[in-house]
Length: 327
Image (cartoon, rainbow, N blue to C red):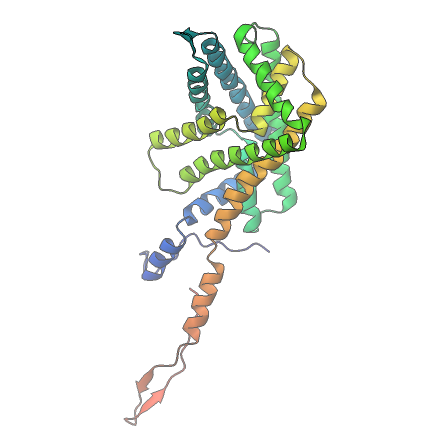
């Protein structure tokens, strides 16, 4: 049975009453939850009746990541070979590369493409409010991951027949892959990879939280939020399962890669991303904005109030039965 979700409470004829004002102050993220649940309904319908179109949306997200990831490594490669007064410009390249990778999330959002990592948050919120089953939620995530991979693979094939991944750009991409696969050489490295994956999707979904909660209306504010979130993950070297999948596909077709290690990296990153986005943002805010128990306690207190005296026809006070219910 689906759990009802009250996006707002209305008193009188279309005006917000004192109870609604109190609830909005106590549960300020209700607009965020309402928006996420609406998005989940669309995703669930698409993965059922028109799954191929949902795959197309997911594939576009993979393509966008593939383009901006190469731009990131191209910028890093250029500045890595530069020096000013004997000082390497590699740090400047990392900053500029991360900034230029940031718009990837902006393009994904405004093209209405489907990205696995933000859908982790959406599915968990829906599962908490019983708007979807775990099977349907996994179908949304599974098809999204597959579509993201296909989109990245398409561009990896295109790169295979171009010179874009040659020279400094290819060297930086290969070095990044070696670093990512190197985490799997020890237990502490796997733990490091897991933590980086948690923080990565925490930042991505924190940006989506700012956008979905209804407090940001201007497009430039939304764009800035997304660029900064991606900048943090790219500059700090955090681990994004979809970005890694795309990168491994690109480097694998152009330079070769250890497939089992690449799959292991993506597996750990998926778990970490789920914790960071699905639990630390999705489950966290779903619970924080669940007013079910609050309304039940309020209704119980109202029904427990003593009856008010009323004047009867005989001139003496008489007791009337009080009643209260959840509105």
